[in-house]
Image 1 (tube, one colour):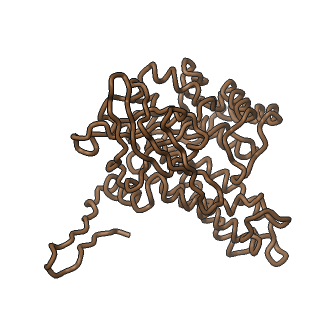
Image 2 (spheres, rainbow, N blue to C red):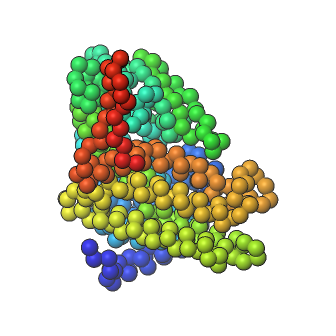
Image 3 (cartoon, rainbow, N blue to C red):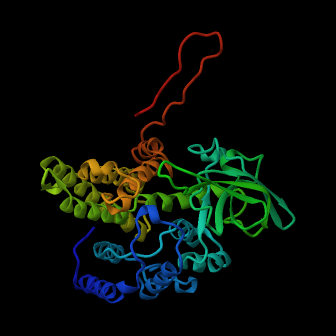
Amino acid sequence: MDLSLDQRYLDFRDEVRSFIAANRGHAPPAVTFRDRVKPGPAEFAWQARLIEAGYAARTIPREYGGFGAEPDMLEQSIIAEEFSAAGVQGGLQGIGIIMLVPTLLEVGTPEQKARYIPKAITGEEWWCQGYSEPGSGSDLASLRTRGVLEGDEWVINGQKIWTSGAHYAQMMFCLVRTEPDAPKHRGISYLLIPMNTPGVTVSPLKTMTGRSEFNQVFFDDVRIPATNIVAGRGEGWKVANVTLKHERGGLGDPAKSIARFEGLLKLMKRETVDGSRAIDDPLLADRLMQLEAKVLALKFNNMRVLTADLEGNDPGLARLVTKYYGTVLNHEIDALAIDAMGELGVLYEDGEYLRDEGAWQAWYMHDLGLIIGGGSTNIQRNIIAERGLDLPREPKAVIPPQGMGGGTASGGRG
C-alpha cells in the first residue's frame, strides 16, 4: 500500500482547504455531544453544499443524489483530515447514511435505491435500526418480532430495544421473523418501516449520560407494503450482515478517533496541573504518545480495509478488528482527557469551571456503551479469534443432568 501523496493529491488537499476557508461561515456551529439532537435546517443546507462540492456522499452515484466520484481512499482520508483539523463539521453521519445507504447500494433493488438513498444522504429522511430485542442482543438471530404477509401487506408485531434515534426518525430498517418454520438464521427478513405507521409506539430510555438517545419500539399490527423488503423473504440475515459490516466500520471510524485525539491535544495544551500544562506532565504525556500510536494504527488499518474493498478482496482480519479497536480507543482518549482536567474532570452539570460544555464526560460514558453496542467486546474477540485467526469455537457450557455431580464446563477466552 503506497501512502505517499503525489502532486495530484497535494493539489486535492489544497482544493479542500480552499473550500473550507471560503465556506466555513456556512457551516453549522460545532456542538458538543450533550447538545446533539436531530439535524435541523442549518445542517441540511450544509450537507447539500458538501454534496454539491463532493465532500459528502462523494462516491454515491449521481442518479441517487450523490456526487458520483470514483472511490479513492486517499481522497477520503484527505477530506476527513482537513475538516477535522479545521474544526468544521464534515457533514451528516446518521445511521441511514452510514449503514442503510451502502447496504442498499450492495443488495437493494433499483427502485429501493432511487426511493430511499437520495432522502437519506440529504437528511430529509432520518433512519433508525431495529435489531436488538429484549432477550435477543448478542444472539440476534433469536429475535421474535414477527411479520405475516396478508395480501400485499406485511403485518408486524413485536418489540425492539436500544433503538438509537427512534424518537425522531422517519424510517426504520428492521429484522423481522417472517418464516417461523425455517431455521432461525433463515427465517428472518429485512423490512423498511415508516415510523409514522399506525401501531408503531416509541418509548425513550434514559441512560447514565442523562439523555434519552435510545428507545424501545413496539409494533402492534403494523401494516407496511409487501414491497418494503430487501433481498427477499428469509434473506434478512444475509442483508443484516452487510449492514453490520458498515455499522462496525462506522463505530470504529478512524476519522472520529483522529478528531477526538486532536481535541484531546488542544485540551492538554490548555489545561494545567500544579501550574504546568498537562501535556508537560511526563505520565500524561506518555499516555498521550501511546494513544497517538494507536490512532495511527487504526488509521492505517482502515486504509488496508479500503484498499481491499476497492480491489474487490476480502480484508479479513483487518475489517474484524476495526469496531473493537476503535471503540475501546475512543474510550481511552476520553479517559485521558478527564484525567488531564484533574478535579475539573468530575464535573458534569453546567458551571463556570466546566470544560468543553461537559462533552468529555458525556463521551466517556457514551463510548463505554458503544464498546457494548454493535457487538460487545467479548463477541468481537470471539469473531476475531474464530473467523480471523481460525481458532476453535468457544465451547458451550454443559450442564449435567439433575442428580449427577460435577459443575459446568467453561471455555471462555477472556
